[in-house]
Every structure is written in C-alpha cells, then in structure tokens.
Length: 86
Image (cartoon, rainbow, N blue to C red):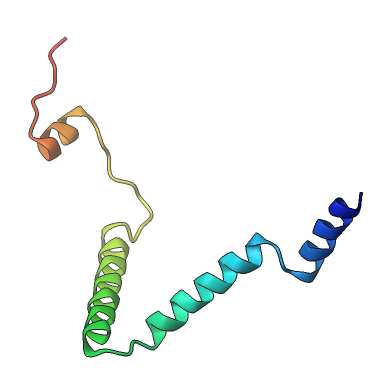
C-alpha cells in the first residue's frame, strides 16, 4: 500500500513521466527558438519558410474546403502504374 500511495503522491506533485516529457519538449522548443550557431539559425529560417509555404499551398488548394477526388485513374497518374483491368 505504501508503494501505491507513494506513486500517487509523486503524480500529484507532477514528478511522473509526463513532467519529464513536457520538460524535454520545452527544452527542445527553447533551443529551436534561440538557435546558437549560424548553421542552426539558417536551418530554422529554412524550416520557417517551408512551413509558411506549405501553409500557403494548403490554403490556396483547398480554400473552399472541398477535397479533391481521388480515384484509380488519379492514383495511376501519381504512381505511374496502369490500373488493373477487370
């Protein structure tokens, strides 16, 4: 019983695995927001530009909320494989 109450007490204080995960995630994000080397700064700039570009393309392509139709012919065009004839 002592072990069970001890683990419950740790989770109530926030000493559980979730706190470790959140702490690691926070450190990762902080490092990304404050890159220290010129290479890290250049990588962050490229990643931000890509994120903006992907978001813009997504907004442009499905601005009205419609989803594109995907059928066998479309998949054959994308993958370069002829659809099987039945």
